[in-house]
Amino acid sequence: MRHFLRLFILFFVFGIMVTCEKEKENLPPTCEITAPPFGTIFQRGETVTISVDAKDRDGSIKEVRFYIDGSSVWSANTFPYNYDWETKGYLYGNHIIKVVAIDDGNLEAQESLDINLEISELTDSRDNHVYKTVKIGEQWWMAENLAYLPKVSPPSGESYAEPYYYVYGYSGSDVAAAKATANYCMYGVLYNWPAAKAACCPVGWHLPSDDEWAALTTFLGGDRVAGGNMKEAGTAHWLSPNTGATNDGGFSSLPGGYRTIGGGFFYDGHGGYWWSATEYSPTYAWCRSLSYQNIFIGWGGINKEHGFSVRCVRD
Image 1 (cartoon, rainbow, N blue to C red):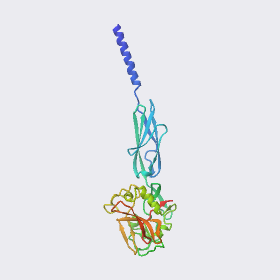
Image 2: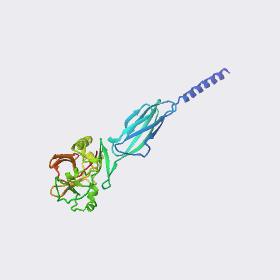
Image 3: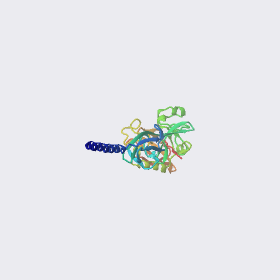
Image 4: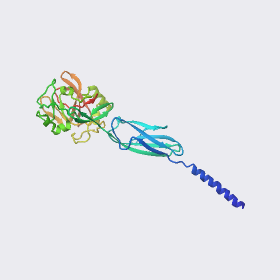
């Protein structure tokens, strides 16, 4: 009888110990991204607020970690679990947000969400032409060349004082015919400096100054490397090898060539050339250029009679 009693007590105590161990078992937390909604598309440059609902049924949340494309960007230890993601330094396209909730027992739960950053758009009220735009650093730029064409001149016409408008490879004076060309559709219009300066940009936008061009190239790594970050990648439009072209900045430059003094068009496929609003002298103005052969961005003063492309920057 005593032996039976001892066995009963032993099993009873063991049962209590097992029950206690089960009661001490740690349950994992829960983790849900509540904002932004799945599938949301944002403009590159926007601030995206990421909000997380993290709970622990048998304890407390110790930490919520935030990741963008696999890189840790933030950690929150107290409710609300939010992170304001500044997208201006990221490429346009798809990005993966991941959040990890960790409880006081070091168990984890996680959730991921795809976000797409797009280039935004601008409609020119003068001709209803729609342009892609992109935020690079603190500036908003057109992501394609200006195509405003109130009239068109043959390449033989030129002036450093009066506005002239050209379309690469077109020698007539009919605006509709010029707009129907492949070069107009791809590269836009070539302007002499007076035309570029004479309010050719849409309302709320302007021809960038030399300082504004400098701010752009500085943000993209400086004159010696910014060209690669500004050129459309590949050789669909640029000649091979289109050295170092990544378009990391989203500027999407194309090799529209230029109209030279005396008439004639040169270097489509080879390079792109853009005016600044800053004069170098009464007959020269500062410009920027890119080449298929390197990653530099060229910078110098050029005669205002040349026909160059225009990129507008927001006021």
